[in-house]
Amino acid sequence: MNAPAKPKLKVATTSLAGCFGCHMSFLDIDERILELMKLVEFDRSPITDIKHCGPCDIGIIEGGLCNAENVHVLREFRANCKILIAMGACAVNGGLPAQRNHLSLPLILEEVYHAQHGLVDGFIPNDPELPLPLDKVHPIHEVVKVDYFIPGCPPSGDAIWKVLTDLLAGREPELGHGLIHYD
Amino acid sequence: MSQDKSFTLDGKTVPYQEGQTIIQAAMAAGHYIPHLCFNPEFKPHGSCKLCTVKANGRQTASCTQQAQPGMVVESDINELNDERRVLLQMLFVEGNHFCPSCEKSGNCQLQATAYELDMMSPHFDQFFPDRPVDASHAEYLLDFNRCILCSLCVRASRDVDGKNVFALSGRGIKSHLIVNAKSGHLADTDFSGSDKAAHVCPVGVILKKRVGFSVPIGQRTFDAQPISATPHPKVKGA
Image (cartoon, rainbow over all chains, first blue to last red; front, side, top):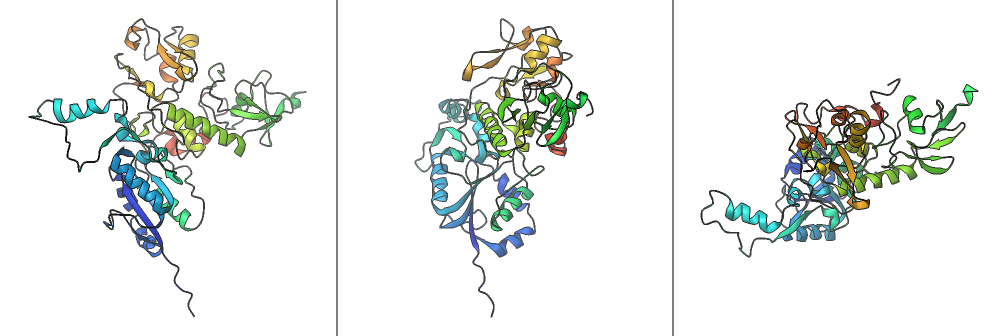
């Protein structure tokens, strides 16, 4: 008699204040994604287009927090995922979006939407559907507990693969020289 | 007697010469002890504490502690590496270390030491300080966002160049690097690219202009091998 098939682990991914570069890098695992699909199924992710995250084993967050919606999505992931991973520089330390942090938010909005040369009748968008920007951009571990971090801008497909396969095998993820990168 | 002039570092015998500190003898023998403010070409400063080891069971900075016969030194142990990682994390959150846009990335001792010690996250909340860049000088720029207060530029300018271009000012968390000019700008000093101070910054503060990214990220010193396997070029036997 065959043993029952091992249930697949559920994985959710999202990009907050990021550029989707880390997700592109994730796809750089190339044909290994077929191997991965034997072990996991995707819940909310740009790959599935599912809009809300259900109970999952692993949640992977790209990007930091630059607006209120980012914080809501992050909390939804943390509430639903047993293991939460920060993927890439922006999730880990704020990254590129956090380079605005030494400027005041009103000044930035004014410059981008109103004052800049060439803007005719520019105004700061105020549609209630738009999530409110945060005063500063924050890495995700400043708001929720994060279990594992994959630094890099972006982390290589090999680094993401190493962390995922370590976790799936029940090992403590370890990157080591060549895979750990902040740039 | 000369046989007595040795100590053990993580169980390995390390010979030393009279007057050498633990890290000087260890480096000369090809061993790596993590460090940032220490540079074998300069008098030790003893400020970053990355090089802290246990000598005969007591913690001490290996850059200032002289080697003693028969000393039992521990360095590569979890207790110390955990503390070193916390020191690194504090340095990272205290400044603005945005590696992807830094010309020093891949050649940076702070970054390479963090790789060496498996620093996966900054752990603490980021300070995101506001530290304007000084681009006043024709050939060099100062990006204070990355300063770790190692004082190597201060020591090089004072002790080698005889110019006193740099100094550390303020105390505690308010310590910061300043430029010795009434305006505070590098352009108003006699700093020059041939100064020793122009070439000792272990991070990306003192950078030559117009040579950015001539070596692509991924092909730089510590991309090829970890810092523990990269001896300082000025150390005998390296």
